[in-house]
Length: 207
View 1 (cartoon, rainbow, N blue to C red):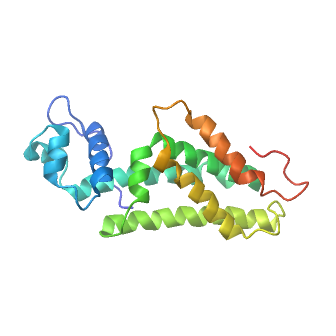
View 2: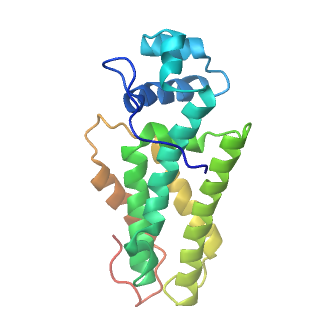
View 3: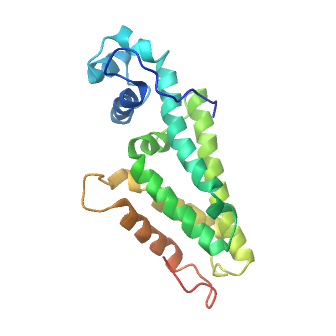
């Protein structure tokens, strides 16, 4: 994804791009990016259109900044030391757990990433990043199969798709204001993903 300035840029007192972006992303998710007009955005923010453009150069910049937040958070998961070194079973557990936490903590932004239609260059670039994450998790499951950690009656690529599908489903129903804490949810997803995958005698801990 094209590098975008993500530092807070202040304009009118009391407003900054980070807090405005939270509202804008909600509008994108409610209406879809294409159908979200500048009028909708300005009404949500309680600002004039010209005031909105004081903070952002275009609607596309808003989208790019929003997607960068989700993509950068997920990239950090796969580039963390725990994801690139150590026993492969532990690496799988770390990636799945951390991805769930990102989905919970960046819920509106990850939702936006997962609902992209690919109608613009910015969207297509973000979708390529998303597919790269899918491939990296699949590679981990392939390695687990090669090392005999994954059950030999399971296809690594299929397992990877199902695992990421479970992680991604979090954005459709998780309520940050509810009683379920992100850490508990992440532990549950890890247990579901890894509990039935381990080759006998290789991995003694499911979550």
